[in-house]
Structure formats: C-alpha cells, structure tokens
Image (cartoon, rainbow, N blue to C red; front, side):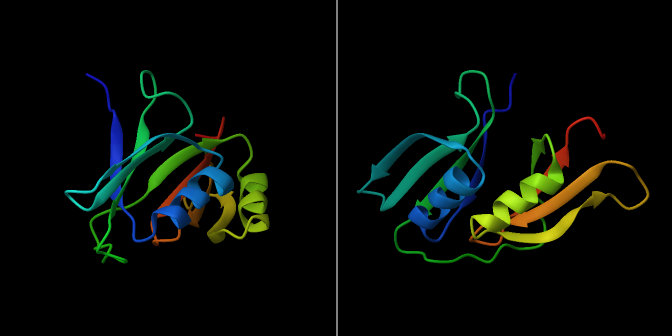
Length: 129
C-alpha cells in the first residue's frame, strides 16, 4: 500500500493553483473539469504521482468558501532551510503564520504558512527532526 494523495476543497481554483505552484514550487500534474458534476480536480506535487504523494485540489464550481472545521491540522513539507522558505513565501505574497524556529520542547526547526483558503502548511527543516 502507498499513500496517493490528500484532498482539500478550495474556493478559488486559480488562486490556489497559483499558491501551490508559484509560492510553494509544486507542479500542476493534471487537471480535469467535470461539467456534469460542476467541479474540477487538480493534482499538484513535487514529483510524479507514480512515486510521490500529492495534493488533490477539489473545486466545486458553486462554492466559493468552506468552513475548515477543527479536526484537520496541516500538511507538512520538508525544506532545506525553513528560514529561507519563509522569506521566499513572504516575498511572493504568501502568509507566514509561524516564523521559522525550533519547535516548543524540541529541536526540530519548523514554520507554518497558510494557503489562500486558510489551510496550514508546516515547513520542517531537513536534518533537524
């Protein structure tokens, strides 16, 4: 077995695609409209779906926002340098919600950014876990 993808619902697909591809540097792997169902699925990631887990962005055409709820936590992305990753996100207009630094009660260097829909993405600095 293998984890294939994580699905999140987004209110504005183009805005979300811009964030995940331009700000976080992922690649749009595939995108398909389903006119009869009035939704679009777009898959983004850092590598092909054959060997990497990816994110499925689901856009329901008639819904422009969602309640995130309190059960979902975050997506995690390994980065070489969490401090530089935050600077890069900020420079591209992204929102850093927790600056890079050691986690509370530990030495792992982490940071959190937020996508346009309010989902949290944790940066975990390579080699500090």
